[in-house]
Amino acid sequence: TDKIEKAMALEKSALALDGRIISDGASCSTAVMARAFANSLGFCDAYRRTVSRIDISCAARDEAAAGRNTGKKQSSWWFSTSISYSGLDPVEKVAARAVERTIRKLGSVKPMTCEVPVVFDPITARGFLSSIAGAVTGSHIYKRSSFLADMLGERIGSDMITVIDDPLMHGRPGSRPFDSEGVLPRKKTVIGGGVLESYLLSSYQARKLGMRTTGNAGGPGNLYIEPGSAAPEDIISGIDNGLYLTSVSGPGANWTTGDYSQGAQGIWIRGGELAEPVSEFTITGTFLGMLRGISAICSDLDWMGPINSPTFLVDSMTVSGT
Image (cartoon, rainbow, N blue to C red; front, side, top):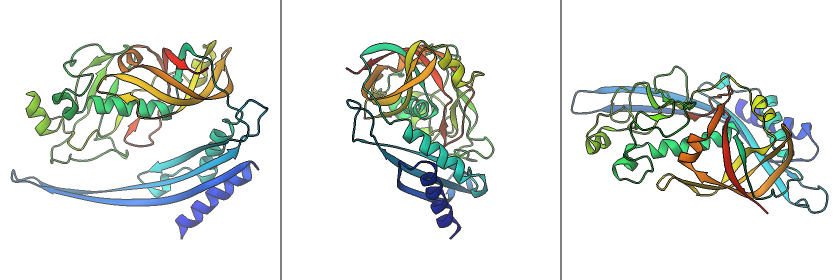
């Protein structure tokens, strides 16, 4: 009953914030998982995990001036997740963020084709890091279906970027006392100052590569890009002409070839400030080019799941619009 009431309160709060908002649904849930594992080597242990989530999806009718996608619906969403129900953000905060993300899309235009600096917000940065997680997974390395095969120990990115996987962090979404083979996980640096230091390996994958398991059977634990010290507005203020990327779509993030091409939405940056919303364009580059082009990382790391990233800036990418 409490969860139903919270979901209804979330929807009511969003609708009250702006008369243009149409609710596409709100939800509140708690999941409980229990895992037990035993093997012939004498390992036998178990643990429980809970995760609670509250989320809402919103839409609004675009009624901007002629030539600006008039009549289309714009939509967005927001959520909060925590290992404890009490740790969820207040419904008012979740509703306000969902409404803000929806309304800021109204009147979107198609940008000109150009090469500009691109600021990845935490959502799009998280998606980028998820692709990197796939590229460093042992199965893709030994099958040679990753652009990072044979690159261990090599510089693959800017010296500003460090990626950590730490399944033993306290109270985080990806924390676990052992992996799906019963191996004790450990904190590891995947990318350290731009250098590829580790793959994520199960025992089988490690044997195929002549290496040792990293305790990552079942995937990464808490994988994240180490935050920097800058605020997003500090980075934006230094960009005369560029893109603040807020959403990507499509299957074009290819960690086999290393090519990156995604349909995108965002907000144009002009004179160091966020200007008009933009949509119906493609953003392209390569994963290595993007990693090497990272020139600023913000401090806004937020634990929304097992893979997380703060805002970061890539010096130059191709925007294909009009």
